[in-house]
Length: 474
Image (cartoon, rainbow, N blue to C red; front, side, top):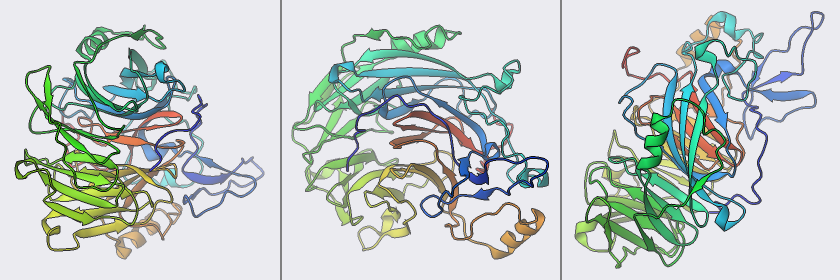
């Protein structure tokens, strides 16, 4: 799979997604009814443009601070285990993909005053007449919001930069100690960092004094390990603090065991079973010694660290490179995988030894799957990014109900214009980003997703995702 962004540029960002509509209307010309645009199927005719429907989001913001980031991670914080009330504050760590190797850095972001509003799961009749499609969105690029109202002030972005030699292929934060992060570089080095001083600085700062800060701190990693080649696969254990896996393009998987809070022992004898590059790694959410890997050899392997260096289960998962996998932490028997051919599959691992374990397979996307992740709050929900410039959200518990659809059409007087040929499990399609690379759900803010692409980051909360958490949950 090709992951690099060729000739990255600092792009102006204009969200254009959602529905099709005419260029405008006047009192003498009847308005054109908005229609839902189906990516990869519909064409944009002359005189038409894609416009974002702000009512589709409870929250939508964008930011770009310089070079594109191929990978990032959302840091767990102490601001509340479950947060539902706006405005939000969140912390992110990301790695750049700069034009010159020496220009790269790891960037630690604090985003505060991330505003939004809760919308009705089912739009009111007045919102379905297509007349208010040009209302302001909550995108941070909008300049029309009333900045005198606290709920509509733009988010505040603060950042700190740490020098990193070479592009950052992937970066992950340790779940138990979020200030400890591991970065995979295109120099073939995996490095572990302590960013506690930078996070403390950002946490104590109440203003945006560091907005646009250009200072880059030189900091030595806690430890580093050189693989035989560069790689992308890396994962911290959710059960054993400090336990780490890293996999490279030479098909080797290495186990890191912590010997103290700041030192690691790396087993130089790798786990080998794949015939091509190891693309992604995932620890089991319930078994300390079990992990999964996927590869450009089209296969997925399940390993047990207590049972030698060969996989315990090995099976063909797709007809092309398996780029990404995600192990469901709320339903541990379920695993999702995404392929270079644009397909993604859901498997029940309890059936993996007996043959075909696929319980769902989707061929919706028109480009390679670049990221896939289960929701940390809803066991049946996952999100996917693809090189077709779409971020999609899926709920596997949904099935088509013709009676409910007929009632909904009658109630809205059939003005929603929802396509009938989309998979019933498809909850949401987000567009507007170019060359999407990675997404993550926020582990403490239900429904919030962050995504990175060539033209920067998006923060979004779709308005049609219903959480089982109570509305007044702290």
